[in-house]
Amino acid sequence: MTTSLLEAVQVSKRFGQNQVLKSVSLSVGRGEVVCLLGPSGSGKTTLLRCLNHLERPDEGFVRVGDEVLGYRQAGGVLRETSERDIARQRRSTGMVFQQFNLFAHRTAIENVMEGPTQVKGVDRARARQRAGALLDHVGLSEKHNAYPNQLSGGQQQRVAIARAMAMEPDVLLFDEPTSALDPELVLEVLETMKSLALEGATMVVVTHEIGFAREVADRVVFMADGQILEEGEPSSVIDAPEHPRVKEFLSRVL
Amino acid sequence: MDAATSALMAGDTKIGNRVPTAEDLLRMPVHRRRRLARRTVPIVALVVIAATVVSFLGNEALEWSTVGRYLFDQQILDGLGMTVTLAVISMAVGLVLACIVAAMRLSGILIVRGMGAVFVWFFRGVPLLVLLVVTFNIGLLYPNIVVGLPFYEPLVSLRTSDLISPRVCAVVAFSLYEAAYGSEVVRSSLMSVPTGQREAGAAIGMTSSKVFRRIVFPQGMRIATPLLANQFIQMTKNTSIVAYIAVPDLLYSAQSVYSRTFEIIPLLLVVTIWYLVLVALLTIAQSYLERRFGAHERPRRTNPLRKQKAISHGSAA
Ligand SMILES: Nc1ncnc2c1ncn2[C@@H]1O[C@H](COP(=O)(O)OP(=O)(O)OP(=O)(O)O)[C@@H](O)[C@H]1O
Ligand SMILES: [Mg+2]
Image (cartoon, rainbow over all chains, first blue to last red; front, side, top):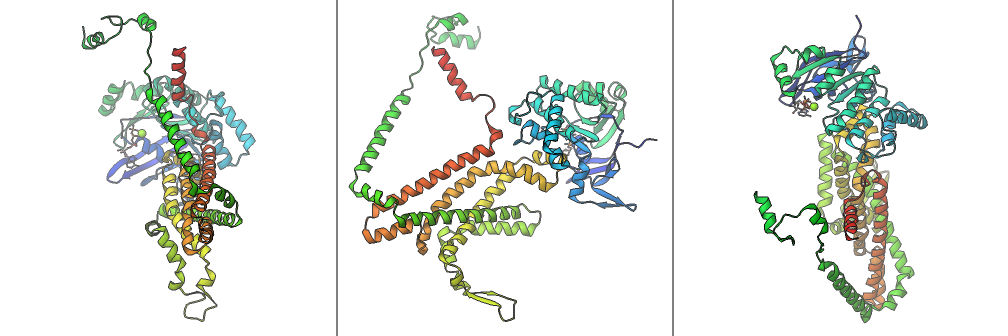
């Protein structure tokens, strides 16, 4: 049996009285593309944020590779680890946000270079060269020196994807990467993501783009009320759902 | 016929009771509205300015020749130097304290946050002049400054008044005052950097101190710069109250001249001119800093106002 690359083990999260995640377990294999679907408020973003420890689970664990996020294993004991250690653990995941969150005071290429130079200690010349290549790769060869507010939403999101890739993470996490975009810009971002998937990247994608999920995902996970209701191949979950909640949701969005 | 069409037809379109076609619109002569205010206001303004200047220059009491004589007088220049020194040192010390107090107010530890809040409340609450006079008289509160362990013979004991000159008092009072106001500027500027920026930094594996240095601080500075420049301008002018405790700043030097010569108005004019020069220099520095920190905020594409102008030129041609 092969061990998965990323695994969430019975993750629970509460905000005040609101139980947002109820013992969610999920595992993602290397090279796998998993799409998370579900109604608004079902906890998709929260789960994704637990996967890189932007949110600390109240109970349960997240393992990426051989690291348990937020903990250090020693002699069969899990000890809560330091903030510096968590920062190091986060390098194995890259995240693309719904609102892009590009560093507003840095140009496109500086955004992409920031992680390699500041976190990995790559020298600037090398980092610049690689960042340039990544920007070319996502179709932004003209925009290296543009500031975020000089870019369209679709361009900003592609810079954000390049920024996440620059850290060479094991897993890329996407939180509704196209839902802040105008319809004609959605396609360029989805195309970029599709080519990443074809190149073998491991991806967890929260999305409302059913077409993308059907075409690109290896597995679709449907969440509602902080629980996973159904998961499986896109053809079964999207086209022949079993759970009535899933059926109802899909009949409304399709 | 719908309501909109009939409303249009009721209006005077100069082609009778017909809705104008596209060709009509392009053929019709256009009468631009006369913007009367654009012509008259400048004329009125010029008259007012001229009258002011004439009355000013013509006023015998101003004694322009006396002004010219004292503008670069050594005593006045020394005073100017004192004013600048006080303002710069107080601002520098004040800003360092402001950052510490801001950090305290953003602390996760309740008592630290509380101490920061009390500091701001106190030094923002006490009027600056009162604060200055209290600091000046601190010797009455603590006559001696003692270094040593409690219950033992002091190692060092100094008279407070020897240690703290009026100038030091002034710097202490101004710095504390600046720290209180500046900390609020720093705190609110840092808080106005969106959380998404911090999260993006964390997500690429930055520690929170790196996130602060590389992302939050530079963006916060952009917001804080004009506000802090404003503080600096205020500070520069506020230092004039040291005349109260006989520190020879710009105002005090002028006062000591006119108490001898009775050339009150010309010397006050000299003082005014120098303060205005200082503020002008600070304003230039401010706009330089704003441009430097704000490179990423250059307007995207064209300025809409400029665009509108270009269109109206086009149709006039
Ligand atoms: N920081 C927070 N504090 C309090 N409540 C929160 C916080 N973040 C999320 N929640 C709550 O948790 C629930 C799940 O939110 P989450 O953002 O994970 O949903 P989602 O499935 O991503 O929804 P959407 O599709 O609208 O993005 C919501 O009820 C939300 O109000
Ligand atoms: Mg969400």
